[in-house]
Amino acid sequence: MEDLLVEKYGPLMDLPEVASLLKLAPQSVYQQIYRGKLDVPHIKHGKKYLFPTPEVASYLESKIINYPIDLL
Image (cartoon, rainbow, N blue to C red; front, side, top):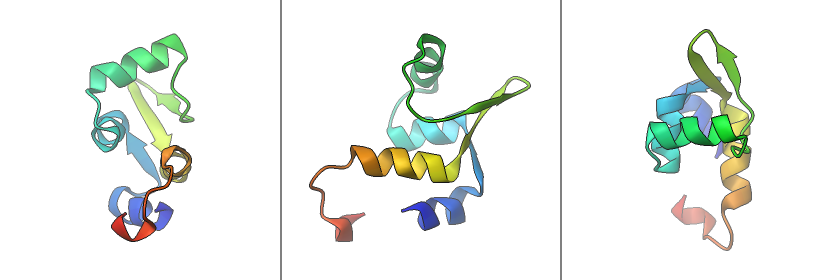
């Protein structure tokens, strides 16, 4: 999964990309960051939040339980 995400998004993903991938509204992701409940490592660069794509892939893989790998 990591290779697919890096190929599509590059080394860093911005907040709207992560929100789309998680099927959440961007505002929901902002709220999770503010409350300290987002388990995905991120950095703030100016006004933007950036997420390392390999870490996003690891987070998604840790949340997938008993899902057939060929459907990913």
